[in-house]
Image (cartoon, rainbow, N blue to C red; front, top):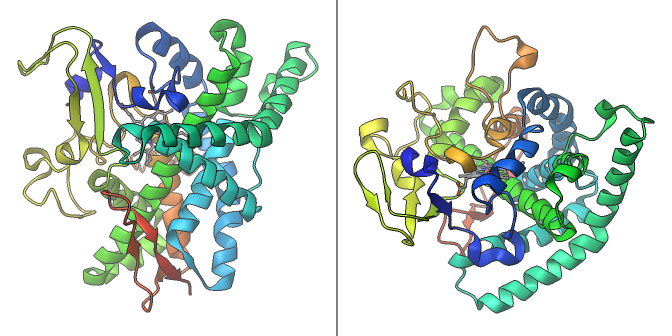
Length: 388
Ligand code: HEM
C-alpha cells in the first residue's frame, strides 16, 4: 500500500466528484501544481509551529470548549470533540473564530459538515445535485460571514509586512496568511483560496473530532477490564498518546483512499494497475494486517509492540505526496525520554483526551452512546458523559 501511496503515476481520485468544494485544493492537485502548493504550505507545518499550536493555542481552546461542560458536570463527547477540534482547526486554517462563542462554533460546524458531505460526495446516497447546491449555499454564507473578514484582516497585515511596518514574525501562523504571503509565487484565484479554507476546515475538524471520540471510547472500554490502565491514562498524557495511536490505527478517519493510474503502473510486488482504473486503498484492512500487527491486530491493545519501520497508527495519515499535513499536529511525536519536555509533542487528540480524563470524565451510566444511523462508519451521534 505504501508503494501505491508513493507512486507518481497514481493520481488522487477520491475527491473529483466533489469538485464544487475540492477543485484545485491541495488534496486534489497532482504533480508539479501539487508540489508547488505543498512546498508553500509546508512552511507552516513545521515542528516549531506544531509546538506553538500545542503549547500556546490548544490549552486555551480546550479550556474554552471543555470548561463549560466540566462546570456543568455533564456533556456530550461528540459535541465536546467537534467544538474543540473546529476551534483549533479554524485557528490553523486562518479563519477568525472565538472558541468561547459556542453558538458561533455551532453555526460554523453546521457549515463545515456540508463541506464534508460535498468533498465525499462520491459516497453520498442522496441526489448529488441537491448536495452540490447545498454546498454552494453553505460556501456563500461562509464566504460572506466568516471568510471575507478573516481574509481582509490578514491581507492588511501582510501589506504592513511588505511595507516594512510590521515584522513578519508578528503575522498569524495559519494557512491563509501563508498563502497570502506567497501570492506572487502561487498566483491563486480568489475562489481557489476560498476552497482551500473549506478543505482545511473539513479535513482538520472532522478527523480530529472523530479520533478524539474514538480514543476516549476505546480507552474507557479498555479500562473496564484494565482499571489500572485507565487510572494511568487519567494521570499520564504519554500513555494517552499511546492509546490514541492504537485507536487511530483501528479507526482511520478516511477508511479508504482512491487513486487512478495516469498510465499502466507496476508496484514493487509486481501488481499491475491499468491506466484509468480506480484503485481502492483499504486503510482499515492494512491497519489490521496480522502479518504486521499480529493475530490480535483487530483488537485494541495500547501495549502492542509494532515493527520499527511501522507507525503505531498504521496508514491512518496516508503516505507519499498527499500524506496528511496534520499528522504530527494530531499524532504528536513518538515519546523520546531524551527530548526536553517543552519540545515534546503529544498531539492534539492526546491532549484533548487527557484533559477530558483528567477532569474525571466518564460515560454517563444512565444514558448510553448512540451511533449515527446515517453513517456506515462507527460515528457517534451522541455520547453522553459526566465529570467528577
Ligand atoms: C486524526 C486526524 C487526521 C487524520 C486521521 C487524517 C488523515 C488524512 C489522510 C489519510 C490524508 C491523505 C488522503 C489521501 O492520500 O487520499 C490526509 C490528507 C490531508 N490532511 Fe489530514 N488527517 C487528520 C488531521 C488533519 C488536520 C488536523 C489537518 C489540518 C489542520 C489535516 C489536513 C489535511 C490536508 C490539507 C490533507 C491533504 C494533503 C495533500 O493532499 O497534500 N488533516 N489526512
